[in-house]
Image 1: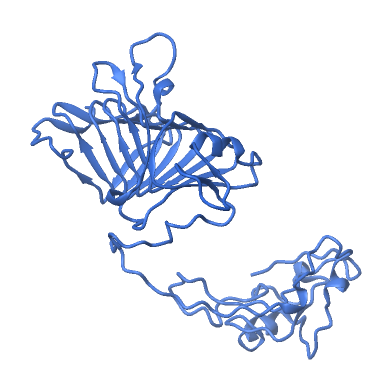
Image 2 (image 1 turned 120 degrees about the vertical axis):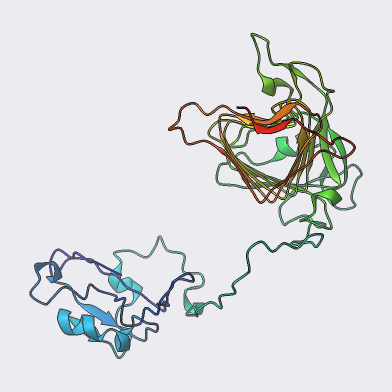
Length: 363
């Protein structure tokens, strides 16, 4: 586990493991007793790398503790079993002023976790997996109607404007039921989280919050960008949405994009139990996007971009025949970018089909 390199017998330096648990990782495939050691078992007392090094143990537990570490102790030699704790923090560190000592005397030695193996491909359709009806602590609250004794914002934009700007602070915006007609650019440097009110957080069909806008963008224009008309554009470092419907209500027009959601290049976004509605160019992925248990609807190239998208257990629904679902713009054959559809369902949107000429991607 360790390889200490103390310069001399008087040098300041040491590794202290105080009330620690030495145990195998949850995914370890074999019994590691007598196989893993606190110090390199292959180094003898005459090995120059062991100069000035002493290993001392007190009251440790686990497969690599003193009782199970005989092989390393015999070859290494410089090991001591302590009968009391003679290495307090103050004796090891030059200063302890930088350490939060608030709970120092109430530390409880961790115990091995009980590992529960969950079968793959198991979902909990229609059953809430977290409380989606109550705002998390510290959340900014958006509501169509006032709530007694609670600070609320009438629009999502107002809540975004009030959110902290620090990259070290998460901004959670909890949105009560309703249709919010807004065009939003989410540009905070930290994590921004949109959580829609829901009593069934893993079922997008029961979502009660919709963010909509109606604006098309000319894909043949020499100025501007398709994202000029997007309903929600994630341009900050990290964006997460739960139980939100994103819609661009612009009707199908030739060469006109109707973007509902987009993530900017080099940025990260995740949509869980959401719905995304548009027509041509519904979803733009220039950065990195993870989609889980989400519904996506559109027509011409309605999932496109030069970034990476991973779609897990989601439903992809074209609303027109004779189209390609995706249009990846991967720059080169070595560029780290792709679209992956894992355990997804591809089927015509409700009220359309059957279709005979729909391709997953452009040839």
